[in-house]
Image (cartoon, one colour):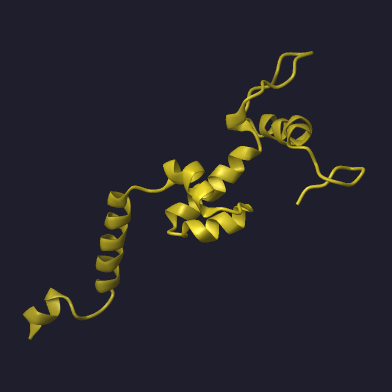
Length: 119
């Protein structure tokens, strides 16, 4: 996806240091470093955090591990599950969303309790 100016793979460390972290500072997400100092190293603020965000959004939307594994370039869905399982929504959250969605959809028609009472 990203290539170095001379071609070939762009090293994540270089991209974080030269492009990503300065963009976060410019956006006000990270504090401006003191003059002569570099932006603090932090894995949480690195470009890799976007990968975890992407995975968490797809898992929360119900994407299956095998598909997510393929999207992330993993050869083993078991590896993906071990790495990203902490991002999976709880079964309680999935259950609430499923039931809420069913009630929302049911409320859009004319077959609810009001219909029976009007008859």
